[in-house]
Image (cartoon, rainbow, N blue to C red; front, top):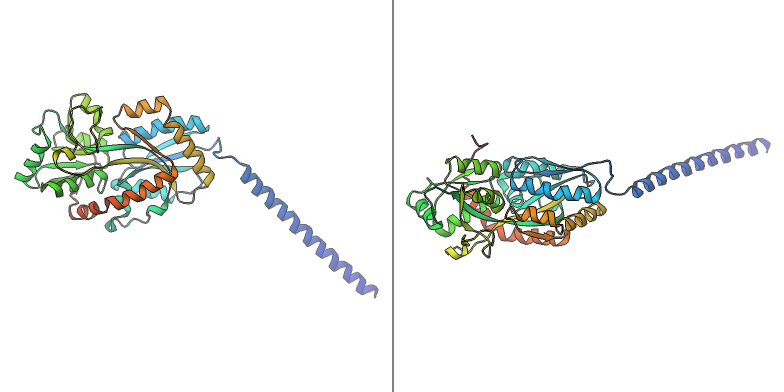
Length: 346
C-alpha cells in the first residue's frame, strides 16, 4: 500500500508539473497576443513603403509624393515612395501584391492600367483584382492627345487624316504597353479608321522626351503629365477624353465633340496587398480622406490639371469592378495591335 501511495503521489506531482507548464505557456501566448493587439498601427518607428509602378518624376510619382507627405505627418510615421517602373507597371504591381500584408507596403494603382496587366492572358500575371486591398481613390486624370506646339498637327482631324493617308507611319506613344494610353489609342483608331504606329515607353517622362525630341508625332497621355509642358509653350493638346471640357484647358475640345463617343483616363488610388489588417486599411483610408480636403494638397494636385476625385475604400472597390467591365472591349483591341516597345528616351 505504501509503495502504491508513493507511486500515486509521483503521478500526481507529474500531472501538476504538466499543468503548471501548460498554464505558463498559455500565459506567455496570451501576453504576446495582447502585446500584438495593443500595438497601434502604424508603428511610429516603422516606415511605410509606397510602391509607384511608373518612372520617377512622372505625374503618378509626383502626386504620390504630394499625398504621402501629408499622410506621413497625419499618421505620425514616414512614408517612402519607391518607383518601380517596367513592363507597363507589371513589375511594380507584382512586387506590391507579393509583399507582406501587414500595412507597411502599399502602392499606387492606376486604373485601367492595372487591369490591363491582369486581364491580358499574354501577360501571364499571377495576380488579379482580388490580389489588391483598395484603400481609396484620390484623383482622375483624363486622357489627352498631345503634340508638339510647332508640329504639323493643328487639330484632331489633322492627326486622323494623316494616319489614314499613310497607315502605320504616324508614331503615337503610350507610357506603357496595355496602359490606359494604349486603350485610348486602339479605341480611337477603331472608331475613326486611323492606323497608327504604336510606341510604348516605361513612363510618362520617357513619353514626353520622345515627343519633344520629334521622334514621335503624338502622345496619348494624361493631363497631369502634359499640362506643364503645354503651359510652357512646348506642347499642345488636340483633344480631351473626358465627358466635359476642363476650365484648365481653355479651347481644348472633348473627343465626343469630334464625333468619337469615348472617354477614358487614369483613376489613381492607393491599395495594399490582399489580406491587409482592417485596422491598417481604416487608418490609411481616413488619412487619405483628410489629405483630399487639405488645401495645400488639393492646390498642388489641381495645379497639375488633374481634378480631385476621392472615393473611400468601399466605393473605390465598386468603381474598380465597374471599370473592369467597361474596359474589356479595349482589351481585345490591344491584343490585336500591341505595337513596339521602347526603353528610355534615347
